[in-house]
Image (cartoon, rainbow, N blue to C red; front, side):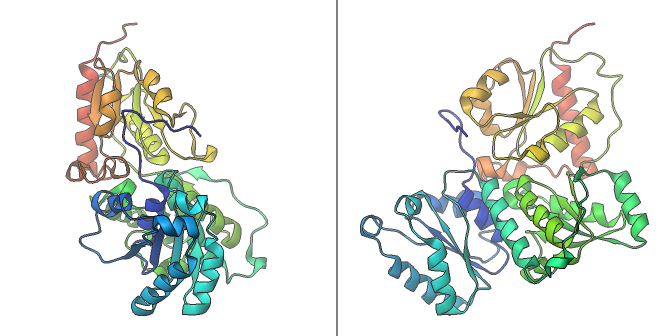
Length: 402
């Protein structure tokens, strides 16, 4: 997959995605890399850093270590820190330099388990992929741990097809169950959902529809809660990062999953927007967020919206018409035809002057620069206000007359 960025910023790295996914779970996460730019995780990409303690470390790989090798020092440093901190687990994630010198992270984790008695594992990061890939691997690993004690006989012979979330189907599942549905929320991190109350709003949305949130992977739920989540009735996947865990829980524990984010239903103003603008309307962002918002805005405005996904994703998540454009050279020509673009403010430099631009900050892209302006679109009032901004921008554009 080609990634070229001359003007644009880049998204958070896969190592940062792992840190974000495991941040609240009491584990020790070690990025095997030199110090330096890794500090951007704490200074830019982690809004919980100054309020909630965590055990995230950099191995501070030196030039001499990289050339001559010094795994014994890495093992000794981690073991010493683990002795003092007593984490629930140790996660060692390599950078591109660790890959270049062929560090055997799995062997190191086996040694650490023997020395400390603490579960240790590694994940296939390299700091060259985007954050969603790191979240995917981290949550998938948690699901494997949660299901490892289940007997193989519990694996279902027939796996229901995954679908997009609908309130009507949720109601039918609730009626069929006869009591509150236990739901795991998968793929929630501040990199995609900020700390603006959106996950709390999602919990309330589910509870008012006869559901009980069994666990949230991984904001607001303890490790023990997550590891017991194989007993849930349904998984709700909020982002690509949660898809791997959902598949493991479906295959090993027989839990079906649904995909989507429940943005409010808004009465369409089709009569007010009879003519579409001269050009497409785009939403740039994480796969499920951008697609769910596009569907909600289409319903609210009567105008078509196209999601653009600039990062790792999966064909299972892609709705018809969604564009996967991971390279700036691919994205810029498409945006030249746009009438309206909804994206993080740092995308604006490559957007055409003639297109309307509506800011929707994304922490994984611009860090905490615009954190205080990120709306909680799961709440009716904030969503209605956002729809009004969209309609205002559409109203200023030249219209196609039929």
